[in-house]
Image (tube, rainbow, N blue to C red; front, side):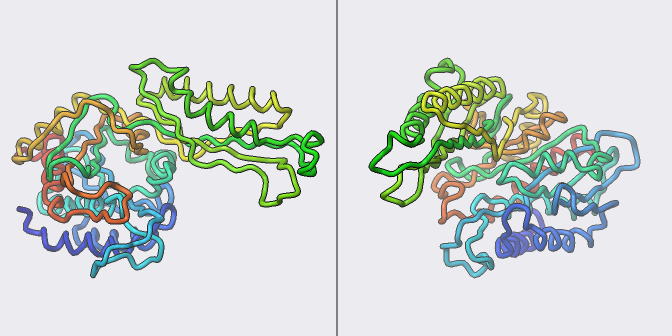
Length: 382
């Protein structure tokens, strides 16, 4: 048991109350910095890729630079639970567990202060804007981060539906690629009594909804997992005397591999343009909230497995990549690393559910596994 567990629980609950959405995590980052400073990192770097924060602990000998990452942002979901530490911001709450992830990474600071790494360096990274898929890329592109150049990258995500405290592992793709497709259609309005004198996008929008939904079946094989979910559609306005002249259809595309994403994306774009042309419409294509697939290095997965077992933590191998997405894939594309799961209870409400709350009993386990990973790479040995 980590002797600071009670302190870390209090930290988690404070962070829960601070909940700030992507790109607004200023107060959260400032509070994390105030927690870290007494544990004397060799360097604290602020405003990385937005409100991102990095604490660096350096060893005396040459060795690998290892990054442990967590996320600063909460979700635009109202706090519906009655908690004495509930969110202090209306319409915003930590329903993905990022408050817990930040706490586990912060729990490494006192341990690294008490026993510094022998070699290389450890970076505790608090990344902004994970929920929008923008933060990781901005961190990697930030010149302040470029000097850190990690050799290894690790992160975890709590997983409702899995046994409490069990480390969930998978080689290769752990979390799926996803991105939002926006198709804007523009024709011409007319009187509703004379639709023949306009160019309505209504039928085109209907075809796009059906076509996008069916696209994975028509353009990918059974082993190439893919999904297209129409999440929004609109034509015209509430004007019963007018045939609509514009419309929009939005869909989220998900795949297990970047190669399949390229195929699915291309087919959807070609289909949208073809349908628009059939009805004489202008067609504008846009993309948003792009998340790469998070692809784990098998050797790093084995290292996590060994670290967990060394701390007496149960492990299990998952067979199928998770359908949700994580922008940590930008980090695993730039350095060797792994994203692993930490079971948060088989009866725990799902992530992003209004009744979800990160279980405090996970904190000590997460800290212990992360520390064991660092001791294997940076020393001193256990």
